[in-house]
Length: 256
Image (cartoon, rainbow, N blue to C red; front, side):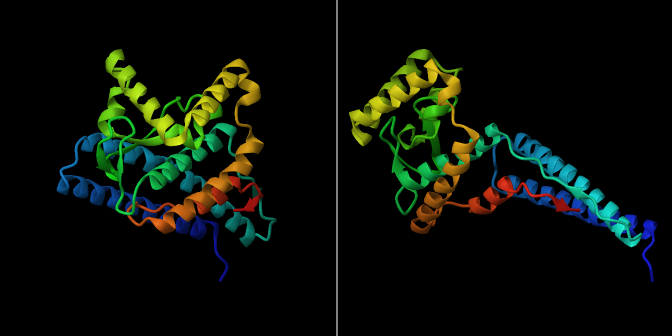
């Protein structure tokens, strides 16, 4: 029996409705989990999850609509339409690279149990209280990805560097950070960081990471991430960075 246009449209509508129901069920489970663990700022976390879910559903709706139209065309013996996936922008690649570099710093700086010493206050703490803090802001793109620039810092020290805190506390924290950074990596590597930062300020266009550079550099970060993960078992949830990267660089047209 030949599938009618109405039958195909109804089938894809039901698929999308099932997906929507599943996301709403997951939201309720997450809400119960937050309350059971007595999490703080539950409303903010749920709102963030709702926005993420809405974005995901919008993408899936577009995908299902395209698949539905192509199935209708196929039933009418017409040629399938080809839809191209958008290439990621340079900034999207940079943010993806920064997230992997920060995760690598967490895995690199902690022991097998997930404990390490804060670079600013020298207090031993666990990875759950960890922030990957940049001595030179991640906005300074030429040094943002350097290993020496991302180090283990506890939550308390990290908060003191926020704009709302006093300038004096921020300066004290950064001075201790700088002192321990030199002790950890040596004066030469610290001076090299400063030199790179000055070059970036002198010519931002020339020294900002290019799209080509990021395309070649990210696989190295992923390889390092996979090697570090084999030595540590404390960090959850596990993110398949290689699979994420494959979806990032997928540029070939696909038929929906």
